Every structure is written in C-alpha cells, then in structure tokens.
Image (cartoon, rainbow, N blue to C red):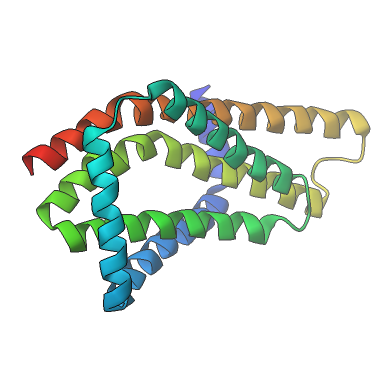
Length: 205
C-alpha cells in the first residue's frame, strides 16, 4: 500500500505541484481581498459573523444533521472531480475549483484574524482547521487523480482495448470513492468536535 502510494505521488508529482500552487494562490487571493474590502462591506460581514457566533454559543447540538450535510457535501465535491476526470476538457475546471477552495479558506481565516485578532486566530485553529485537516488533503488528492485520469485520456495512455480502459476506470472510481468516504468522515469532526471547540474559543478568548 505504501509503495503504491509512493509510486503514485512520484508519477504525478507535477500534478501535485500544480494543484498545490493553485490552492496556495487561492489562499493568497482570499487574504488579499480581505484587505481590499470597503468599510461598509467589512462592517456588514462583521455583523453577520457576530450573529453567527451568537448562534453557535446558544444553539442546541444537531450533530446528526451536520454530519449528514457534510457527508452530502463530500459526495458532491469528490463526485464533481470524478465526473470532470472522465472528460478531456475538465482540467481547467478542476484547477479552478481548487483555487476557489483556497480562496474561501484564505478569506475566512484572514477575515477572522483581522476582525477578532487573537480570538480570530484561536477560532481559525479550533473551528476552521479541524475539519479541513482531513478534508483538504482528500480534496487535493481527488483533484490530482481527476487530472491524471483526464490527461491520460487525452494522451491515450489508457490503452485502446476495452478491458484495459475498464480496469483503469474501475481503479480510478474506487480511489475516488475512498476519498469521498474520507471527506464524508470529516463531517464527524465538524459535527462533534468543532461546535464545542468554537464555543470554548468564543467564551474564553
């Protein structure tokens, strides 16, 4: 298993570099946009953020609903990449999707830190990062798998025989299904771990 994973990473190192760069660029763009917000936009977003935090503090736990939403979101995210990987024109959309995910993360963390200072840093670490520790690597790996499969179709590297192509398709689909399960699993963290950590940060920082 470890050897297969190492071989996969080595064979797709340029794609991992491309996806990583897109993600980092997205983070930087998200953080930069925070600095460019107008005063009115900043006040409106800050008010919305404060209202959201108040709801977190007083809300009753609804772990089952949160887990279900996160599971559905995970299926959609990986399923979107899986479909794009089956096309020969989906590569730009895959990279753009990774950039958008980086943008959202960068904007969220930068805005929290700008508005809440130390509390924003703690909130980022305790509420934003825990679920993403599992979700983001799986999402980025899914993007690489989709790009690799799509580009193999373009170059004709999957072979002309139906059996060969079918075998590669099954392997690709199983790998993406595994990543979908991993992303769905991050919903457990968002449902059971993040809410108490967020309440702790809001009450003590």
